[in-house]
Image (cartoon, rainbow, N blue to C red):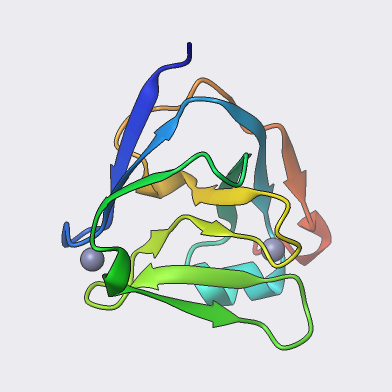
Length: 119
Ligand SMILES: [Zn+2]
Ligand SMILES: [Zn+2]
């Protein structure tokens, strides 16, 4: 049995729980992630598609899909915080590291697209 972690957006409209059962943790430095998320890189943790329980506010979530790249973001309509979403390929649930209330039992494994790294 793995631990259960909780997460929420900044305003608290959206709350969820996930099992602490993650398969990958990437920090993506690509230009699109910088624009999409604000900071110099995006920290995303990957888990199984069905590893999520929405506790409240699922109808408060909206989604952006990049027209050509494998890039999406789901976020709270009120505060704009990134919340978990299923990727375009529908292979994984992607949990923005900052949306979790507790530390997951996984460390960042790789920095990707570092050629586009901000200074
Ligand atoms: Zn919110
Ligand atoms: Zn990226």
